[in-house]
Image (cartoon, rainbow, N blue to C red; front, side, top):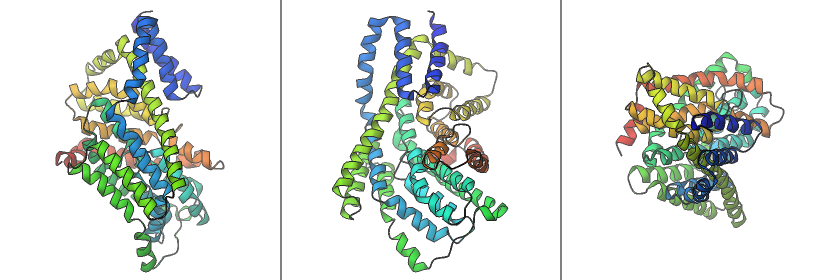
Length: 432
């Protein structure tokens, strides 16, 4: 079969397997292996396919992924996320929509020690949804706030998505992490602004809670200092050049476990459960990466990435218009694909185009992750919304997605600001 027909058939087969609910990593491996065999024959294909998984799993650049996952799981099992929400509730609860504001603040704090969006959404569903329901919050705004707060995990460092982008494009992961900080803080402020607007427009759906005294507030603040300490230790070490990203991940994981154990929040049994959960999560991510590598070999042999890059480069459009097309493509793909799947499938194809146009790779990486994070809450398959739905079966998806629309509009505005003013992304990493 001619190679020019193999690539579209491969993509069609891949999406068919995804629709049949085959895990994305396995689907990419199956299609990639089958297509590679059809393109070059079984014997040459077997030599490549036998070595690709081992090379991927043994890549030193990917060592930071399980370590940052370990740090996030250890922080969750230490009860840090509960204390973050409690501190947020004591600070914002007496305002209109205060528990929703607390959820965003707690999600941002948890994102600073956990690089997973789905983990953030699942954690806050357990912690924040029951108090919001008890306070009289409507399910739509409550669940929408949790879903939106979860997206902070993919941007505020440490970020698994930014780390994988850095590995695929051979960019400095430390600079990518630092570059995500300002856009992440912008997201926190803008999400809180949306909640305030929603509370004014529909006060009954976002009521107030009782005001607490300063003594109770200060007591809750004293419980969350480990978050700030871990965040400053990891990100500050990378910013100042004390640690490489992998070293920062290792130091952060050890520091989080020791801190939880010493304070009595992480006994030995919990440490064992933390290691087990980290292995499961890491195995799932590495399966996606291995499948992507195999699928990438198949695409490379067909010449599809080069052909697509050439086609995009030759479009009669300005570089800015091409960038808008690329970001719009990510928005559409985000409605159907997992965030990691989008990165590993598209970045090897799109990244060379952006380099031909002279775009900064760090800036483009942050824009890519922001657009992907928007896909996590966009219908019809907003992953974060379905994570919440899987934990709370009686939620009505229509109400949740309707409440998410104002957040998406604000995210589009934030994306436009970052496109117009790249300095917002690049100032911190350029000062490293």
